[in-house]
Image 1 (cartoon, helix red, strand yellow):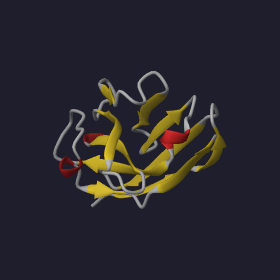
Image 2 (cartoon, helix red, strand yellow; image 1 turned 120 degrees about the vertical axis):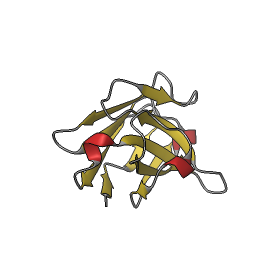
Image 3 (cartoon, helix red, strand yellow; image 1 turned 30 degrees about the vertical axis):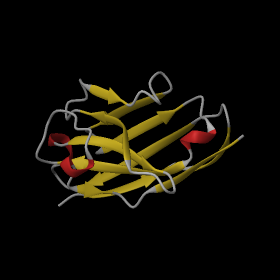
Image 4 (cartoon, one colour; image 1 turned 90 degrees about the vertical axis):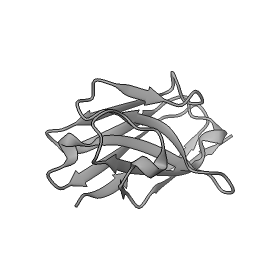
Length: 125
């Protein structure tokens, strides 16, 4: 069993930065691939970034490449999403997810078996 708790969301002006954190409980964190997803109203949930269990491999959606950075600290059971140069189209609820069956990064929601409650990110123009 893995419990995930996100923090760090909020309201920011376009061009600003936020860092999301996801604290995980349970002993499987270090053996799980992790991902950050987002869902805007009326849109499907999409994977914006993902990371392998070691942190050695990462994935970014084209829409965030060069602006977002995913990282993890297995000693602290925490995964981060640093978001820079934010745009109004980044506005969404952001979810942290754990994929316990996999050690390489995953990009599809059905490959993740644990989810956080989500944190709202709003970027004003």
